[in-house]
Image (tube, rainbow, N blue to C red; front, side, top):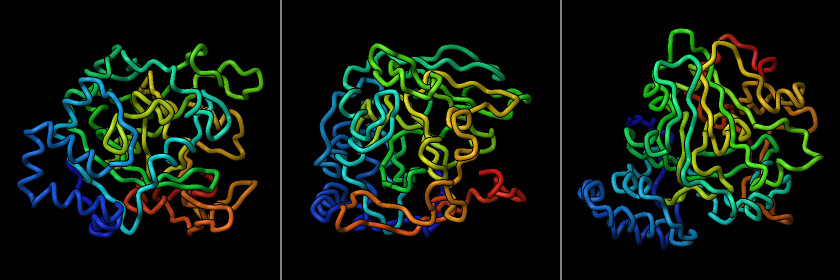
Length: 336
């Protein structure tokens, strides 16, 4: 599925990558013929990723990922005027409470997570329920690279190039019934390899649960990611399969998904259960509605130093205004 991106969201290649990498890519991709060649030549696709993301730690991708990478549509969506967050920051500063509460805990503790084989249970109001292997889920879909802004509810943000396919395509694959109104997601529970789940101090009743209205899930921007920075997802960033919803706060983009349920009532999400006065079901990025304990009017764009903080204004829906129609007539200060 190809998405027509409004001109306001297009970026010059030199604006989203360092100059040296930009020139390397331009040399590799001489015009539109190179894009067609990459679809037919796996080696050329790998060369593209290696040239653009030269500073990214190498990985050993599974066969299903490598096959899809050959025909990936690179920069299907970009972010105008934005610089991609360095890979080190994106992989070593994040929240994944299954591995601990510190920002560095996921990178430190996720190495033992086993992501092969990976299966996802699809159930509820669907015509094709069942336990699907990751290979079966991705097989019908072409990979796209989408450079999205990621805005955390804690008022920091990144710009990340994801690889994957639209959530809508996956849902169409399993055929929701007429009774389906919401999509419920669950994260893996593995107390042996996820030390945060063993903690007696955790407030979370595992598994971690998130949800979307069905129309939100079907929006073209909602995305299922299996890779980032031209490579397979690192464990600490949600391997093997994660959700990316760029107009919502980051905690909605649930990681390491093992269950997707189509349901007729709104699921109670994890943070709703823990602190409903602070974290609502919708969690749309909204600079006009503050968190009870801090402002949401601005954000700290990483990398950001103590003595030279990179603080920018937060945009409504994180700058993805094309989703506004989903919430027409709603009081977004109430449905936060």
